[in-house]
Image 1 (cartoon, rainbow, N blue to C red):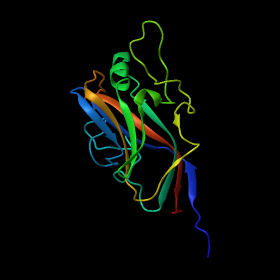
Image 2: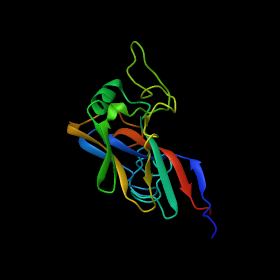
Image 3: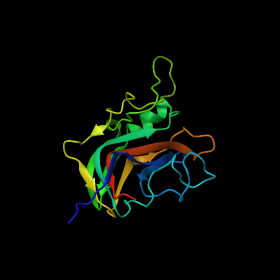
Image 4: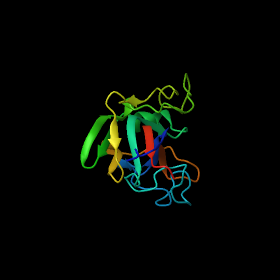
Length: 191
């Protein structure tokens, strides 16, 4: 019997949600695929590849597997320092597979590992969350998690009190867009 051949590449899974200006006690990631919901970047359209690379809600399609090696949280580049302090410092980041939580940590321990970095005296906005190097993330490569096809998973940010931010995107959702990236290796059957 021939062994199954897979296309394997380093490709993060990512999804964008937003912390609303009206306030919330939690936001979820990976629940709304491309073509559904509302884009965080343009409220006149549904989610697209700028928001997510998920094609199914909270699962991988048939024939796909993903090995998670780390996590990153990438807020919008126009996030204010006040919003970073309010929204990120007070949040817990939780990643679940099925109904089981596999990681619960303070959100401030999950850096962006990407993007510009603006700071220094007099700075009022931050364009990066931690040093902008891909190695700067919450890494679990010593004990990776595997997502199998059609297996439910998700991530969320939760707060003990309702949090409201002031950051907004022109044309986007009324709130702070934040992207959750699952760093890892994507394997799929050849097309």
